Structures are given as structure tokens and as C-alpha cells.
Length: 251
Image (cartoon, rainbow, N blue to C red):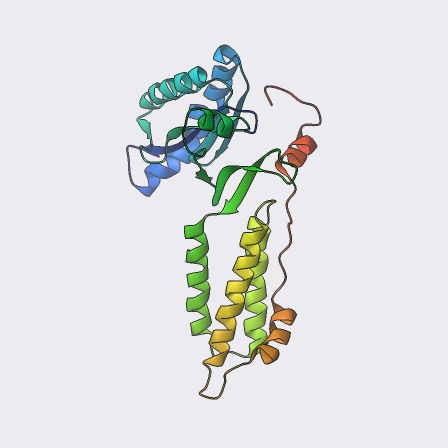
């Protein structure tokens, strides 16, 4: 994706809106999309093509714009044969990659567009050395929804013993970090822990009229029960090198 010039974000859907129809989409994608896309890449692509699919969502990176547009047209025709279609709101073609910002600046356009995939917002950024770097951060709407669920659950558990609340919040933070602790997302991890810390202190202070906790009283509880954020997942290229020790254009 870092080498691609054009990036296509596609989402599939069935003509049958029921759960059975949506389940059949995910079940048949290997034949309808995966195998066909592999053949299309070998027959028509002259530049690099990167394909990442999960269930009914996929992201494809193309080196050449003409090939990206041709693939999108051929994909629509392919899906029509199976009574499938591309989601009109989620499917789009954007300029993305290490040269996207310079190209758009030269044309007088704004920053490269962002896109969402698997709970993350991905956008073009720079490393500390000024090199291109693919940035990932947790989607803002998903983050707000998770905090709202934590707030509602803390209200329900308000009068539970503090150790039980602490163990539950530790599980919440551990689960959130287990998925979202990817490189370039540390600020979101820290913000999530900080918001959970505020919500818990507010909940404990409302247990009684005289139950207000000062920062000095609350800090030991947060230090004991709420784990600190840290990056748990490797960089994408490191994970890819483990699975594919040598570069294979068709891998």
C-alpha cells in the first residue's frame, strides 16, 4: 500500500438484505473475489497490486491509475454475474501512497484522502525522519461508542466493590489495547485510558454524597488496576516479512 499510487476501498453487498444473504456474501467471496482477483492481477496488471480483504470489505492498492479503474469496472461486471454489487457509499477510488501528497500539492489540491478499514482510519503521514509512513488510528466514532458503553456499564456497577470494578476495567483496557495497540496509534491509546480513568473516578465519587475522591486518593487505584498503554503489534512490513521471507510479487 505504501508503494501504490491509487487505492480502491470496496465493500460488497448482496441483493438479498437478510442475514442469510449477507452470510452467503462472506462465504462465497473466496471464489467470487479472491481467486478471480488473483487471475486478474496475473493477466492484466503491469504494476504492483496489493489486495487485503476481510469478510465483505477489501482494500486494493494499484501502482497505475488506469489499472485501478479497469479493475473496478471488471469487478462490477464480475459481481453482477452473482447478483452482487459494490456498496455505493463505501466504494471509492483515492490517490494514496508516498507520492500522493506531492502530486496533489503540485495540482493545487488538498491533502490525500483518508479511509477506514477494520476499525482504523488510515492516512498518509511522515516519520520522524521525514519519510512517508502509513498512519493508523482508531476510528473516532468507534472510540466514542466504546467510551459510552464503558460509562453505561460503570453506572450499572457503581456500587460493586472497588476490586471487582478494577478487574473489569483492566479487562476492558487489555482487550482494547490487544486490538488497537498498533504503531502510530499510541496517542489514541493514551487518550482512551485517560478517559476511562476520568469515568471511573466520576463513578466512584457518585457512590455517596460524601464519596468524592481527590486525585491523591484516586491515583493509587488507577495505578493498581488500569494498565498503561504500550504498542503490542509489529509494523506491517515486519509481520509480512515473517510470513513471506522473500519478496514475491504474487504473494
